[in-house]
Structures are given as C-alpha cells and as structure tokens.
Image 1 (cartoon, rainbow, N blue to C red):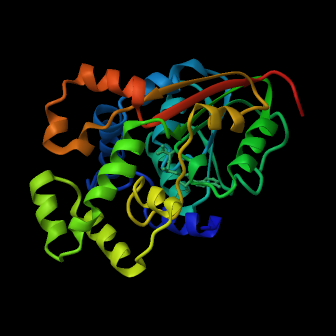
Image 2: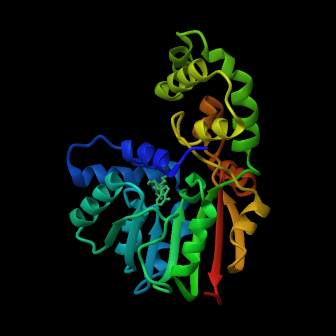
Length: 295
Ligand SMILES: C[S@@+](CC[C@H](N)C(=O)[O-])C[C@H]1O[C@@H](n2cnc3c(N)ncnc32)[C@H](O)[C@@H]1O
C-alpha cells in the first residue's frame, strides 16, 4: 500500500493542474489555469462549490493545491484558509493570492495526521478531489468533523465508482487495449490518432513493462491522475455515505462526463448530452452535509 510520503512526493513534483498554462507572466499564468478549469475541464465546479455563498464565513479547504477554487471563495468574501500536503502547492497558492491582492491563510499540513486548527474553527469545509488520494481517508473525515462548528457544512468531491469512467473506461476499455501499448512505437501512434497525451501513454507502457503484474488498486491509481499517481480510490453512494456517517443531512450528486477521454467520438457529443450523462454516470461524486452535533 502506498504511503502518505508517496502521495506527497507525487503531488509535490507536479502540483495539480499547474501545467495547464505555460504563460510567462505570472498573473496570466494563473488566469489561464482558472479559465481552463472553469471553461473546459471542470465547468461544473462553480455550480457545485457555490463560491458566492460564504461571504464573511470561515472556509477551510483541505488539499487546496494551487488554490484555483480557493481564490474564488476568497474573491467572493469568504475568510479563506487553505491547507495542502505539499509545500510546492502552498507556495504557488500564496503567490496567486498575493498577485490578485486577495487575503488568505495557508498551511502545509497532512490532514490525516491532524489539521492544525482547534475544534470548531470553521463554518464550511471544502475538499475537491483530495480524500480519495489518502491511505487513511477516515482520518481526514474525522478531522473535517472536528474542525467544523455545529451548524457548519462540508462539500467534498470523491471519484465515483458508479460511473462510465470507472466501469467502462478504466476497468474495461483500458484493460482490453493495454496490450496495444507494448510495441515501442504505439504510444506515439495512438496519441497521433486519438489526441491522447503521449507522455501518459509512454508512462503506462513503462509501468506495465517494468512491473508485469498490476494489482486492482494500482490499476485504479494509475488510471486516474496520470500513470505515476501512487494512490487513488473510487466510492459508490453507499461507500461515501459510510465515510460521512457522523454528519447529518448528507446528500450526494454526480457530475462530469469528460468528453476529452473519448477522442473524436467525444467531440461529437453535444454539451447538453454530456451534461445529462455526467449527472447520471459522472466521475465526480459530490457529497454535501452538515455537522449538527458531536465532538
Ligand atoms: C487532485 S489534487 C486537487 C487539488 C485541488 N483541490 C484542486 O481541485 O485543484 C489533490 C491534492 O490533495 C493534496 N493532498 C493529498 N493528500 C493530502 C493530505 N493527507 N492532506 C492534505 N492534502 C492532501 C495533494 O497534495 C494535492 O494537492
């Protein structure tokens, strides 16, 4: 089982979505990342995160990465704190807030080992695409519960097991076609035909050649956030409900069918159809709830 040190090393070497822009001007660099996230890739995030609903409230983001969403909370008047496992992400997040003249507090912290805040310090905890990378997700959720005030809310995104991405892409199609990657020229050819990232295909080929047998957990991990991602997990409705069982009024939604994964077929899918597929079998399981009582 990968450790939190493996997770830290991976995300520190390439903070999440930090390569979405290569602009030299730093303001432009961060702006382009936001534009790509909300315009193309994860256009549902402003809808599910509800950035404008926390004016004057104390919001904690667990696993803030380079604080793309954090900036939106803060610009909309939230009193924002971001924590992340990696120093590199926090450095970029601080630079971003300074460049845009927005107040925010940041800490490098491993949420599994304990969030560096007293009990009942926040009104809202947000965590997008983080807890499924943890070897001890229950510990992070326990910390989220501890730092929330009574009446406080949370909003978490976990990868959805009951999705097209998991059952059709990861567990069926990618397994079926992985043998195609063995000849050395294939990553380049497949990339040229489909438009898929060549470096990812090369990475898959390298791991398969070097490792031989790959466990189910390793297969899931290497097919989510790139071939070298050490750990990622998926959750269905019941598994997510179990994880958040200490909270009240928990509800779930699913979002996001990524047409980019389907090459030219994906480009033929109208946005309205992709939206409907995403709301039924999407990759992002949003979990919302409240802490009404407890420690
Ligand atoms: C997929 S990225 C998501 C970043 C950000 N939430 C976003 O949506 O852009 C996952 C992030 O979670 C952080 N992370 C993973 N495990 C963590 C932990 N135990 N404590 C704090 N942060 C963690 C990683 O360092 C990484 O920045």
